[in-house]
Image (cartoon, rainbow, N blue to C red; front, side, top):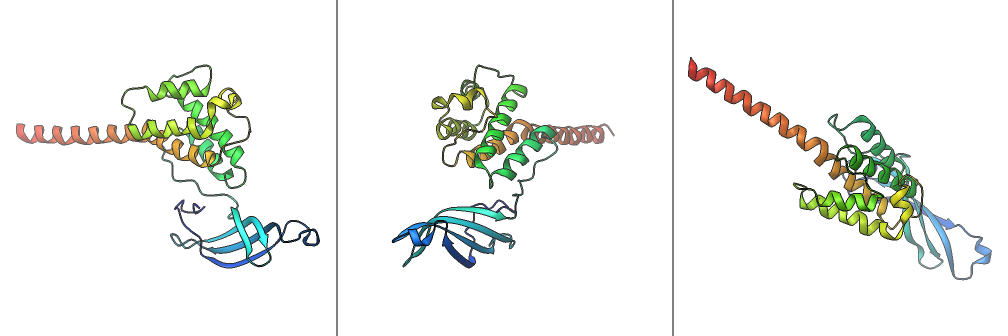
Length: 222
């Protein structure tokens, strides 16, 4: 899982784990739906995390977990986004990141809408649906291969071709593919960096180089 504080991929060492039934135990013969509460500290940043565990409860083997949800802290801290990125994009990304632990479907809907807004506004790509827009973006010159592969994964993981609602009404909350919400957030980070951060860094490097060259020219004249 990702630590909700530092966003590092970690395994939370569980200091305590209590489990029980979601169903009436009197109606369960050998096993049934179960839940657990686990708590521990992130090994990367040392901050406290509480997990809600869902799984199958076996009387002999305890809880066999198939899903973990962070219940504390309530909202995850989004990675830092610089001022080079427009505020509306930063706000949407932070919202998508914050709600991902509570509702991945809502997070994916916000992320798809943000992805389409970036393609419309920053790249002037406006087609009949998100899938077509992603296809056109992947054909643009100077797009790095790793970003093209990431965008390709959005098409595959999100299965956009099979779900027209995601293509046309990108902000609508619909069923999502496994890991779709997480992957959309990863892709958006890459896209925001490529679109806004890297050009600003290049601009600053050019300005610094020009300043050095001008200084050398002035010294030569003297």
